[in-house]
Length: 481
Ligand code: NAD
Image (cartoon, rainbow, N blue to C red):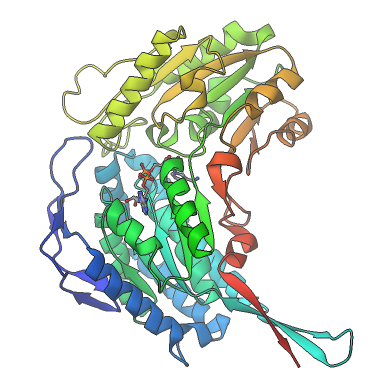
């Protein structure tokens, strides 16, 4: 793959960037360059925000359209994205190391489904409601679009997480400036091509591939009305401070350290539960914010759980992300592998028992691979149980009874996801409700577009998806009549 672009998609046109700075995305499996795109700088961000502003403010522009008319454009965009499904899969998988089988299920298909779901919500949208006034007259309550949105996304699920922002923002009548992560820019170009083909009005979607400085410039830009961010907790805190100072609405989807609670009645037959367990704990090489990387196991079945998870992680096929048989690909960057390896060293150093993995796989001399790794006898207070590793590393923690399991699950700075594994779904749901997280699953986990997704505590603020996700792109205006 050698994909070269020399323009930026801003204001419905392909324009030349303000400088000749470039970004070179790299194949995570082979460490070879994949092409080159311009790196947007502050001047380009200014142009993009102006285009989004103009599209939003125009008296007969996007924001003023009937929601059903916007929905038609959204459906066309979903079709244009679907047409490019194979391209999205190939580009994402090459850039960030997501196994192509996983990319095929999530980075293609899921984003257009989210878009069509929000097109459906737009068609049912009631924008104004009239109430009889308490002291006479009437009052109109309007759900107005919030304005120009700065959308900053990470590299781990680039298209899914971009669409978590585009779809509700478009439905509400907002316009966006999207800043992809420098590791995953080639898929963003495919998205820009789809936006152009679908006839999305100029300035509604603008894309500025760039690093964190341009991101910081964008989120504090005076002409931006709302920030939607997905990424690390550290960057999220930074952005929250900026938005706090500016009194700017912000949605933050940050890191996680979710618990997978195995109850004493759980079916641990991997032939039955292996796929679900993989999706909930090791999806995308462990580079998934909601991954249940703390596995809590009852003492009564602890040895068995250790054996099952050790066999499970040890049996996964590790290899080039482009191979359909690959279950675990490389980490996205050299920096990410270094970080994961330093946590593995810390785990051993803090006394956890390594039961499988811990090193680099044999025979893979290029690409940022680490073996799927399991630590048993992990103390929940230890570094590997408290900090987000963002790699294929599981920590197995024993518990005494349900109260103890809930206490351990909740003893975390994070609160994004989680799972409960049990033969009795009702019992599982009652345990799930005691866990302080924004989302949790019983015997499965996959964010469903119809329901809010997001975290509490250090996992973020606000929710994406569902009608709640749409509300985050609206503000209410009251008109006394
Ligand atoms: P990151 O925070 O370093 O970068 C994310 C994005 O923000 C990138 O586009 C980056 O350029 C930009 N950025 C970084 N600092 C910024 C700043 N101060 N101002 C503006 N923009 C800034 O995160 P990452 O390493 O790319 O992604 C991994 C993290 O994302 C993990 O912690 C993971 O848990 C989290 N994540 C969370 C969710 C969720 O929904 N909660 C989903 C996926 C990933």
